[in-house]
Image (cartoon, one colour):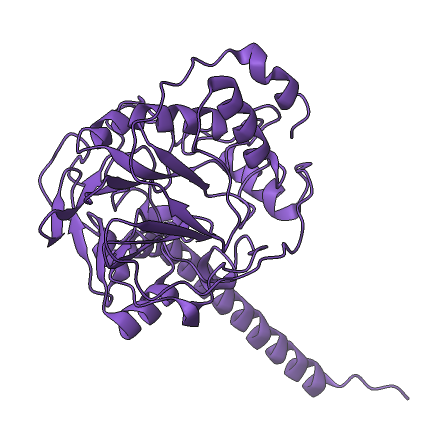
Amino acid sequence: MFRWDFRGEALWARRMKRTARWIGTTALFAIVALCLAIVVVPHFLDRVYYRGSVSAHFDGTRFFNPDGEDTFAPAPGGSRGSFIVRYLLGTDDRPPWPKHVAVTPTKPAARIEGERMVATWIGHATVLVQTNGLNILTDPIYADSAGPFGFGPKRVAAPGVAFNDLPKIDLILISHDHYDHMDLTTLRRLWKRDRPLIVTSLGNDAVMKDIPSVARDWGGRVTLRPGIDVIVTRNHHWGSRWFADRDRALWSSFVVTLPGGNLFFAGDTGFGDGKWPGEARAYGPIRLALLPIGAFRFAPGQMQAGSHVGPVQSAEISARLGAARAIPIHWGTFRLSYEAYDTPPRLLRAVTACRAITGFAPVAIGRPVEIPAYAPPAPARPLDPRCIEPAVGTLR
């Protein structure tokens, strides 16, 4: 005869109630934690890197481009969020890139004395410039990826100078706080090894925390020795280490005044009002300019973006600087936008040919380039768009 086990049913019911209470309590804590995260995390990530007086490019809390703010614009064809998702998923029909590019690394001289100048493109925006007994390094990055915690675009070209083959570095220029320009691990290694002078713009010293550096506003100057100064100069960009801390630190270009002609490092920049190259030129003749030409296409046929210049505008910057020699950087190392791997140098060759600009041509990663003594460049011709149409039509 079947008998119902009331005690078992009651025990089961109590267990179910306890389970329901546990699930409910856990869900409640999860909701509270999520709400707290939404409130707290953005403020935690939104670090205040700089406090100072309001200026023509600082509103008291964040920096901005005084020539107009176009760096917030989403990528063409959708929102910024959808662009990032399509980029990460590889569903944006980007031209294929090589997974690996062969590089023949070099071992630079320990020093280059006198007014002789030798420049070695190490990759991306990292260039070693040797002159007057100084070893100058721009935005050094030796990481395998350009992003936080190992995420981000992967390096396709090894550094043109192995870290252990770098000569003792005297001066490092840090243009802004993006991961492909401020590699904290590399900076710590360089500081521990060489104790260089690190010059940057306002707020970036706080981002670098334990790495001693000197931060200046646009127009600020740091003297290395008589006749050799670092001047922090204006460009057109933005800064952030996290999504929430946008523009808490200032971006910049640099002029290094040198006997025999100055060095100009553009950092990472858009064109903006196009007046800032003339401001840099006012400090004296530019013997060598380091100018970005990559990460400019986010839609088919695009020639530039608010934050980045392509070869067309970079050639114009070179002309406005009056640079005797220019080396194109910020291409061919990390895949940051939609153009094909070789689109930047191919387009640059077409533009400089059309404009009769000499001394601005792609160089190989890791190949030392002797920079001639300064001589005023011949005036560039205006760009006739019809001249570059055949080249543009074959590029992605």
